[in-house]
Amino acid sequence: MKRQLLFNLLLVSLAVLVVSCDPRMETSGSNDEPSTTSLSGDSGNAPQVDTADRNPAGTGTINAAAEPGGVRGFLDEQQIANGDIYLKDGKVYINIVGLNDEIRQLLADQYAAGTYQLVHVAHSIEELEEAQQKLSDRELYRTLNLYGSNIDVIKNKLIISMPDTSEAKAKPEIERLIDPALITYDIQALSEKAEFVGTIVKIDPSHRQILILEEGKEEPSILFGFGEHSEIVNAQGAPITFEDLKEQQEVRLWSTGMFNDSLPVQTSARRLELIDETTK
Image 1 (tube, rainbow, N blue to C red):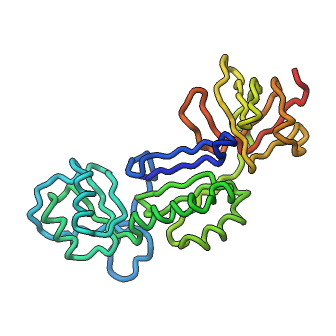
Image 2 (image 1 turned 180 degrees about the vertical axis):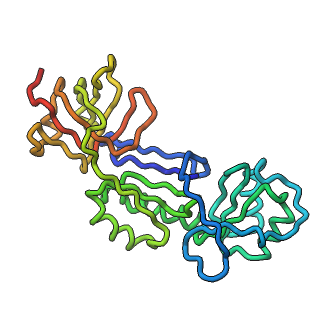
Image 3 (image 1 turned 45 degrees about the vertical axis):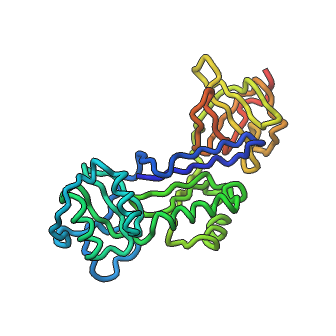
């Protein structure tokens, strides 16, 4: 499960889309599971599922899986440091920072056995959210050309997405601000094949946007915004400017991967290549 907070890279004045989701919302996230190992010794930063032999007998009768919101409330009420919860295989997985026998017994006396699973994690959800907020507060999405970020509750990490062209500059800057132990990077290389091929049907100079009619479609379907990090090249691969674009030009386009669910769909451009510079 992932807590999503996705940021497009363009500011409003540059037709930037900022897409954010409820940080408590569960999404189709990673299929990776924490390893099932003993908690004895140094287990590092990887989440560790509590083993069955550590589960104490308890008096709990509440079905944790039926009331995940109640589990969050109970953790807050008891002031138990945690990395949030997620649903899997009919159970609530509860990420606990500093898991010990006292916490195990407290939960066993509240929730019915078999309806929850404890996981030892290194970072609280507050730590991860604070780290994510720093990216926004310092405007690093724009200045470092980051595509977005999300909190992966299963991995107990802040996932930061960026193009491969930003990696060398961005990583040192990020890690001066945020503990690297909190972070996993999603580095995205530019694919050889364009994501979209079509014709420019409208240009909005004030917002630096173009409307595209994709090949094989009858109506314009995607609005691309251009920011300071968007690449624009002619048919020979030489750099050109947004002002060089004209209606009816045929283009290949790559997006940053962030889309606003609207009509037309809106996204930000990573790269545009002219197919034919001749205005039709």
